[in-house]
Image 1 (spheres, helix red, strand yellow):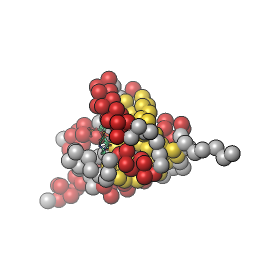
Image 2 (cartoon, helix red, strand yellow):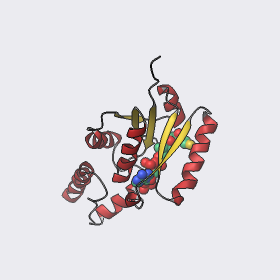
Image 3 (spheres, protein in one colour):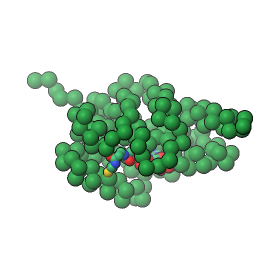
Image 4 (cartoon, protein in one colour):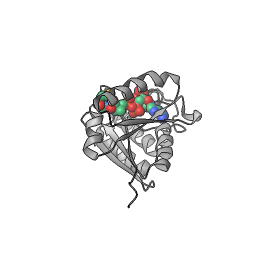
Length: 167
Ligand code: COA
């Protein structure tokens, strides 16, 4: 009998993706046969980069990871998972402060669909202080974020800065 492929979803806003997210993606890609990194387009957060820009950045950062696919979704996460026939959601934990939010989300998702399981992976401690909003804040106040995000994010941030400065 053919072995069932283990597929998981790693959802997020990725606005923008950081080295912390990439660390989780690399860890999850080793554990699953396929990982779908999927960008939520209906997050309650105000987004900075458009969905298509975030998707392009993700393609660029993850193009060498054979078993990682990129997608977007605008529904409930559990409905997206169900539509793909995937029962595992991966989320990263950076610090204890992430736990409460992640715990509530995982329990709610399980209430919405009892078959869906959330798996948590610990971010490498060197990325524990990184968040997308801190990256944007530091960059636009003139700080250097190149140790925290991939090159394509720097390019995208600079593109936006140039447009802003050109006005
Ligand atoms: N390294 C670095 N930063 C990390 C990180 C890691 N490993 N993991 C999370 N973060 C940061 C992100 O940078 C982001 O920072 P910010 O708040 O400054 O922007 C924050 O932690 C959380 O971001 P992310 O992991 O992208 O998740 P999210 O909370 O923005 O996304 C969804 C949550 C999209 C999964 C959730 O809203 C969802 O499922 N939405 C669909 C609708 C739905 O089903 N709602 C019901 C949910 S119960």
